[in-house]
Image (spheres, each protein chain N blue to C red):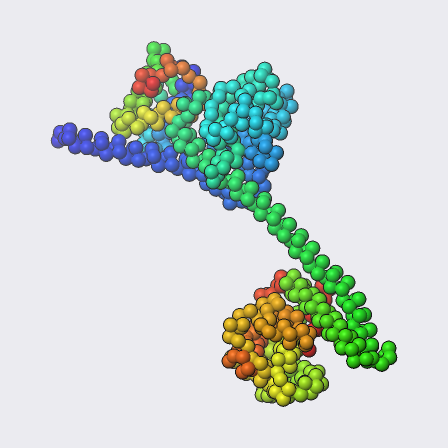
Length: 482
Length: 95
């Protein structure tokens, strides 16, 4: 029989020991990970602060086999440390402890009371250990009561850990055990160390969630208040303004008798200003409806060329007044998916702008182009044109070209028309663009609309759900165009 | 020593977490210790056998194969067993 080699045995022994040590590390890590996994589940669940604290203290007490645990949180507003959750290994041993346990669950300590050990932990930001429960519950529980409770819960030591996050102390974790801290196993110490950090993260997350929820709710309320205000104010403003406008019109039409030139001039200025105010209120109401998702949009099959012809008929009297020529090119193009009333508003706005900014004798032309799955409609004028640097601001609220204030004032513009038109086209899945070679060189406004198909309508409804009114009380665009 | 079977059970359980079934095989050879087929520990000490010695034999068995690290695991197992004991109840190897 071959003799065993002593050197080989020593090597094998060494290998055995090293592998054993590695296995021990893995076992400890495994136990820690198991607890961490439970805590991560709590972190990933959106719960209130109290529920989070309760779940945390239950998991820690159970997994580490402690006699009991408690979480206290700092209340910065009240300057107190408040008990929010507790757990014990077993149900309360004796009924007579229940009143004390109830008091413990609701305890609140002033942060100025440094005799209390939990408060001391908040200030020192360091772990503390005591063998007397009284140190943690004073002044709410008498010394004798605390001793009796401690004995009945079989707690030998209480360890207090500061719960920290981002440099702040959020509160204190109190753990009651039936042994001394030095008698904790390596696995228990390792797990506890990892767990304390996660408690801080979980509670901070819960507090942030509550704060965000409150802020979100407040924003929703403010948004609703704003919409209600705009809606009510608009309605309340429009009624008297319409009356003012009507009477001014009647006076200007001579219904109240002949007017002097000066009177005509004053009344005319008043009429124009009132008209602008009414348009401004209407535009703001339209924007409010679009932005709050209360605008009714009903997509249907629309012949865009025919729609433009209808709009041309309506603007022709004004165009003739201004000695402007409005022409339409009439190619054969596919029908589009659109809400005809909304697109009419866009056309009134674009053609209205061209009428405003084109000198007498000029031309406004409307063209169509079918590009794949969309139809592009362009309104081209031979008017004042736009400086390249002004292009980006024109589609924003109150974005007007410099120097056009006077023109807009004369022609009752609000600076909101293009913003509203852009919003409407975007609700149709399209795009609105502006091209101009510069001042004095005319401008071309173009917008695209999708070629009609039921699938396109379905896609639009899905894309804009939340942005449009789904058939409750109908909210239309108030006409403010030409 | 009171609850010696709880302590021994805890040691074997902890060693099994590290070594697997090998931990049980090593424990089977200890005099006065019986491991049932479902892994439960039964202590049957003879009149003159000391529980301290049984504990010492068990720990030394692990130490012989796996070194000092295995003694630390045994110490942790005792701490986590929940049994109240005095230092004098433990063999020298575990103090």
